[in-house]
Length: 316
Picture 1 (tube, rainbow, N blue to C red):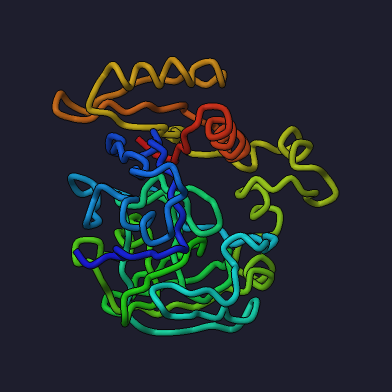
Picture 2 (cartoon, helix red, strand yellow; picture 1 turned 30 degrees about the vertical axis):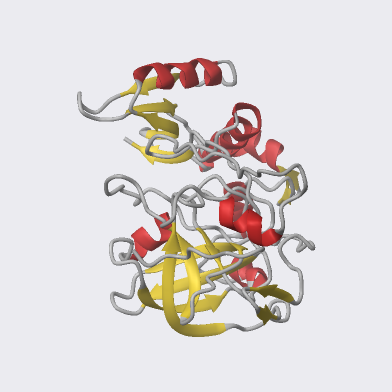
């Protein structure tokens, strides 16, 4: 499939086996050097991956439950925003901050080859998250992407650089490409539009500032109250369906799934359990049911910080 195989010096490597994915983790050894001297950037790039070509999960994965990125105001640091920068002999200059950017062209996607590696701003790439790589937009920038062939749309957060293939304007995560309906094809014609976050939050018909803050877990004041005070006063206003769970991982081995369940069990009062749809299915580690969005946001963050995995929401 046609995905971004060359990231140059922009994507730095740190191999982590993340237990969040819907398929078992793929072990990817760190680069090896035959010398004690530091490797040059070219040597590092040449040895970083054991996998020559990118690939997705072993079988099609339903990502309909994966929510679009929710635009929020974030500080932009120097991480990922070197300007200008050079990759493969080509120099790129970043666009002005918050530019009214819109472009049509070809999109690709990237998956397991980069899953668990650092993105350009130091975050860990999750192919089941709603993120993207762009050559010149500031990091982070939220963009709306429309598949021009079927008019499906997603909102993703740019946190990486690429794609550096000619003729590609954006590289989406596997999940985003799946939701747009082109993961099996490799590429699609898309329109990419940068989102003005301030307008997004305040625009009539979109989420209110209060609901937005609750959804992303911002530690800010909401209607004169802290979020914790709002939770205590009106948690019933932000309920989740009774079949809402966080999934922390899925494994072919019941032993591995049980080990993760035991690790996460001490972090929360919510039940942590292993489930299997049928005898041929993966063993999934899930937490819940979770009753409201406050708890979901806080628990998702806790499991990531203390448990070392980034769970995603499912409804079973």
